[in-house]
Length: 449
Image (cartoon, rainbow, N blue to C red):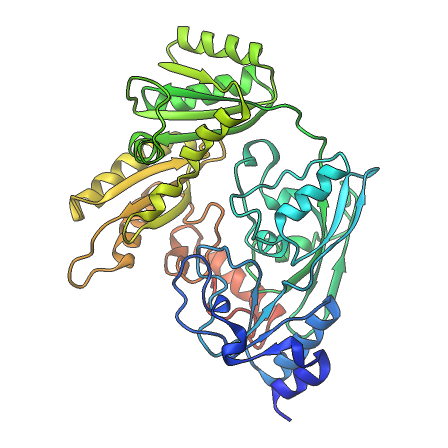
């Protein structure tokens, strides 16, 4: 009996798809760099089904790749054609919302937005939030340790998890569904799987930490003259406005491109930097803070949103959907010490422009959590491709001892540059962990390490 026949016998015929029955979706994540469909697509309905599938694949030494919402940008869910893909889309549902302990038990295939709504219905708040909330899944969020716009206040996805359940390569189910904030009973095993991109085990369930609702949020847009003043504004806001929810900076080229495309104009004058500040403080407090910031020379101008619609307009520029239409657009996600971000942006832009004078290069990011995103669009010459851009962006980053991935993971696209952000000893330890938990190397081979 072939492996696929064994999988059908164990999971049911409808759970195993081949060829055209799979559709195009399993071929690539949102990086659009995938070139092949998997050998087959498995659609389990439970943790036990996942365990059965992994056990059979491990015994047959057939590689496996986990797939969630396919919203990643690093090629981490892309098959090469030889793997069996395991889609967790049917391992879906919210098992419990515990108001007393402010926790939620959720299955890995549940979309993030569904979890957010369930928390809100219970009078609580799930802090993790991404632009792809409607299609990304909790399993994918945790396997890549997703970030988002609220990291400055609530932390990364890792900080939203109290416990989880994962399946090892040999089908062993490790259920560590801790629900307590304090639990120092030995190793905290969940951290083996959060951020490991499915290379050490497949996450199937999780206990998420919830928070009190942040209340009404006031959104303001500030015009700033220099990167140094962007940092000074951040520190002043953290000192005076304890309830900062987001602090998003946009460099001139990024802001201007999107604002012009959206036909939005907030001030008469142009400015080098624009910052969105969101706080749970009231409008009067925000206005007083901005007046003082203006008097102190930290900002050149400011506007407080008077409605949700106006706040949405500000965020529409930051979301940057118009820029996605640029040809050969590459989006980078890096982090480095906050004080160096301004210098890095200048040096990186100069290096890219020297190679491609007509390239579009723009920066935006969370800044307050040391994360900056880079948009690069250019027409390649003979012998050039996206890796020519990667070499410059990551090569310059290496001089500043930054991270090649702030929140999107490593996947395949960033793997050649991982040595710029991790030491030889760290890489060796990663290899030892991989060999211990997945001795036959079947889990997401070729990804991360």
